[in-house]
Image (cartoon, rainbow, N blue to C red; front, side):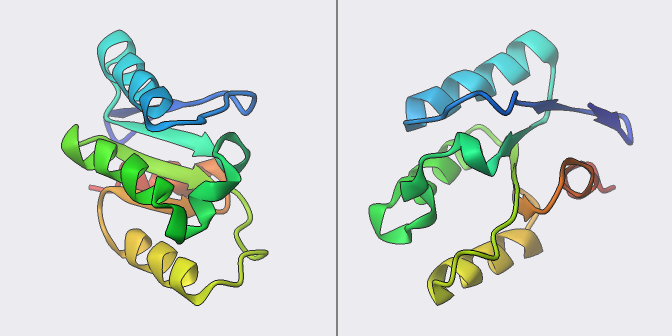
Amino acid sequence: LRRNGRQVALADAAVKIAAAQDLLDLLATAVYAHDCSGLIVYKESLPEGFFDLKTRIAGEFLQKCSNYQMKFAVVGDFSAYTSKSLRDFIYECNRGRLVFFKPDVDSALEAMTAV
């Protein structure tokens, strides 16, 4: 996907990202094979533990994005998650410039390519 002169990869909805290494492989493919500055994944591609902050999976995944300066967006409906800490986490991510939780691909692309 391309917007504002930036290329962003969209992972297929069937892709499963079970571990940080899976995410790292996707990020590397997006950067080196497609010259992308970001990656959008569907919520369903992530392990359910990602949305339980106590597991630290989300932190581990987002650390990979930070280390490699890759923008990362998760798209889907997050309304079913009632954890205050998760809601705060999503809110803070959306205020930043690196990680986003958006309802659809278009809004994720907009956030990732804002100039």
